[in-house]
Length: 148
Length: 148
DNA sequence: CTAGGAATTCCCAGTTTTTCCCACTTCCGC
DNA sequence: GCGGAAGTGGGAAAAACTGGGAATTCCTAG
Image (cartoon, rainbow over all chains, first blue to last red; front, side, top):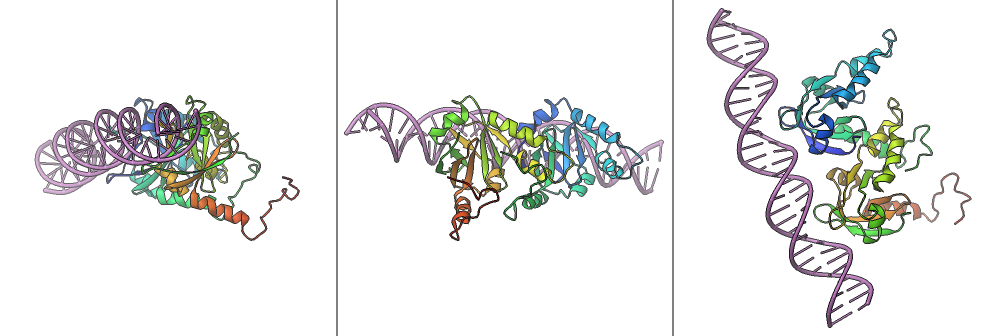
C-alpha cells in the first residue's frame, strides 16, 4: 500500500529520484519495471508494471464504439510508458509526459494505494486549496457521515 | 479514548516529543508504530497504526472515477506516513506535513477520541476564536437541542 | 558507404541529508 | 536535598541525492 507525500526536484535532464523508502516496494527489489501514464487531472500515475496490467486490460475492454470512452483510452493507454530505473534509482520522464502534466522541476510525489501520483508542485497546491479553502470543505454525496 | 490538550515545542530538527502520559497508549508500550496524516482544517491527525487501517480502507473504497472524492483521498492517504518514535519518544514530522499544517515550533497536541490532532499553536487559537467570538457560538444543524 | 555530430544511457564520485545514539540539564517526587 | 525520570540538544556515522562525465548508439549529411 503506497502512501505519503514527498517533494522532489527533477534534475536538468528530467530525471526524478524515487525516494529510497518506496523504491523497493515499487520495483520489488529492482526486479520489476514501472509504468508511467497520464491522468485527466494533469498529474502522472506510477505503477509497478505488474499492477498496471489489469488496469490496462480493464481500459482496453471499454466499448470501442461509445465515443465517451475513447478519450479515456487515448489518455491512459496512449501515454503509458514502461520505464526502468537507472542505477541511482531515478526514472526519466519523457518530454511528452512532462508537457502534459506541466512538470518542469519541482514535483510532489504522492502515494495513493496501488499507485503513486506525480504532480507539478504548483498544480498540487492549487488542487489542495480547492479542498481546504473557504472554511468548509466540500463533501461529496455519500460522505456526509464519514468518521475519521 | 484520547483526550486532553498539551502545548509542545518542536526542536530545531522538527521532532515532537510525545507526552509521556499518552505515549504508551499510542504505541501500546512501544510495540506499534503511529500514523501521521493531514486534515482539511490544516491540522495533522495522529493514529496508532492499527486504528488507522480501517480509516484508510474506507477512503480507499471511494469510487476512483468520481472527481469529488479524489481530493479527499489525496489528502488523507497521500499525506499519511507511518512513523516510529525514536528512543526518546519523539516523532519526526516530515517537511511536507510541516509545510501543509503551518507547523514550525509551537504546537498544540489535542486528544480527539480515536486520534490526536496536532495544530500550529497560532492556528489553534484562531479556530478557537472563531467559535467563541461574537458572543454567540454558531450551532450546526442538529445540535440545537444538545445538552451538556 | 562512411564519417561526423548529437542525443541518450550508464556509471562514478562529491556533497548533502538523514538517522541513530549519547550526554547533559531540568523538573518532579520522595 | 537527593535521586530518578523525562525532556532537550548535539554530534558522528551512514545512506542517499545531485551532478557531471564518458562511452555508445543512432541519425544525418557528404
